[in-house]
Image (cartoon, rainbow, N blue to C red; front, side, top):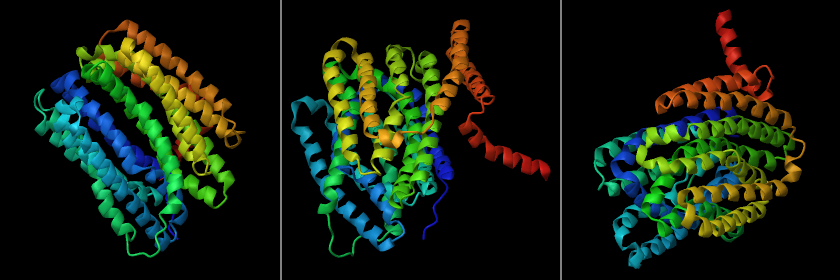
Length: 485
């Protein structure tokens, strides 16, 4: 039987991976935003938003389904190998169809100015679907995932500074974008073929997987619509510059959201495993601790980013992106709710085979987002697009909580939420005070971040927040152990 890695260690490895993903845009985006400007960034962002739809069809909900079902089979190499092969067969078929449909865009007059970008970005489609990262998530092997990601990001950063030198180099930027996002998937495919045996089995049963995969596809499609369609509609209605401003507003919030969501990605396999072996108490304890941990990070992060939105935009992008500040404030507020939505939809409802409710919630959010965008974007542009995203996330939250109400009952997190909110009061006070004292962007970031963070934890400590005590206990244990020596 395969030994199950520690969830805490997996979270640490996944955070290292995400932090590397944070460092890459923090180093690259200030350079790229100034070299390419809002227009160049907007061109790449516009086509990237479109290729995302075709990639979604190619993926077809397989990764989440693969983690969910594969976690139940991970102790049986024969069954897991056959299951993985069936997923690969499905993705080969969807990749061929999606790639062919995507290349048809070259024939449309509206995309004549984007032909080169369309061709460069075609690699997203097969690489996004055939990269078998989910196999390593089944085995909870986040160490390998992290190391491979670090290698690809390091190469990507070198290529970026080597290839992108002036405002006409947006095609080179698109190439690096594809490589940095999808290069790891090539390594995953090679490594996964050594971890599990692919092909060589008999009696493949593709049909039984299609219904649950299509439900997950519906969720992913709707989610991608209201996450990507903001950029698509901005590009179509307003122009590339507005897309560039929205991308700038979204950049930092996406980084923080990814860090928070990485906790969810780690626990999906473990939660599916607990449900599969009927360990309800362990499932609920893991769920409770995950929700508290996410709120401990997301609420102060949201407040901090709202306070620092203007200096962050100025530092990362420059004065030409100042119109992105209101959108960034709104998207920062979205940090509180969006990761929780992902947790409930994928880590709570999915292991209990309630995918249809997640799909309903996501579709409702997408429809609301698209409807509001149609009326709001022409007048409020990128700020309006950000506001519709926030409203849509609250819609998804309401439906998901209702669908999972029996599983979320009696988690006893009200006390923790009160403590977290109390801890955020000094962050707000520190931020307002420092913003009024100095107009220096660097000083505001360098002062508000550490002072606010320290004051937050100093408030939680005397309140004896159980999650904070749980997190620092291993550190105290190691320190006392060294002192005794």
